[in-house]
Image (cartoon, rainbow, N blue to C red; front, side):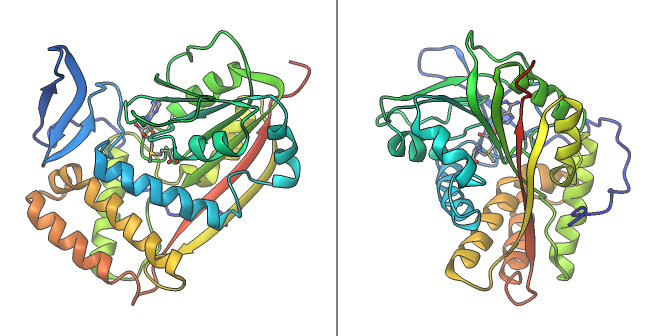
Length: 314
Ligand SMILES: C[S@@+](CC[C@H](N)C(=O)[O-])C[C@H]1O[C@@H](n2cnc3c(N)ncnc32)[C@H](O)[C@@H]1O
């Protein structure tokens, strides 16, 4: 599959006039927290970031479920397991960038107790009470040099499609390259956030989402183009695969994938309502109605998986 969408027809200049209303919250120790509340959902509060999904418990639940859906679709946690599994059985260091609630890491840390697993994220959505002893999590922004004084054998980045301006992908991949060992493996799993649909209401949401992301200087079609960015940063691309996932129709997992995508468009409600110039409740009604039609109109979404390697001689 070439790309998931044609380029949105909007200006790429940044605009601030349609910012959704927000209030900052303060943590219990009195310092400014990294949380912004909009329409009763919690979002990160990193001024420089264009990420548009929440970071609250509802979103964590969605990400946990989505992890298992992706695992099923790609046949496991590792692309090309015949190549990568052997590596994990040794004592290696693994990093997940933008790990969210660390579901992928927790799954692997339990399966491979001899390896060490690290996660970074701009938002502190990490598990608090229970996590394996070989799992280490910290707040860090991949658009800045990563805070490690050693290098990793394997690094993953997964589902940051609505997190980076188009120009920032190369910065993120370069920062990852710099903490990957020569010969180390880089796994990328990304989604095109614009679904394939014929439903008029979902098409309206899709068009407005493309315009919103374009105003934020994001390219919603980036997932299909990441092999090029990997090569620009000097990764050797070893493998590329795309998967089209039915939403709301097909297997029980595909029906669950529809619910997860509904969680994405509802999670973007404050931004989307401002973009569409309607109030948040009206937007949510529209999004729920459009989501109910995903099954009958056979909507799908496309995921891309890539494996790359840092050449062993540099
Ligand atoms: C859709 S979630 C995916 C989480 C996880 N990778 C997964 O597959 O379940 C995207 C995550 O990227 C994080 N994120 C966004 N921008 C980031 C940045 N510049 N640096 C690090 N993490 C970032 C968000 O806070 C969020 O937790």
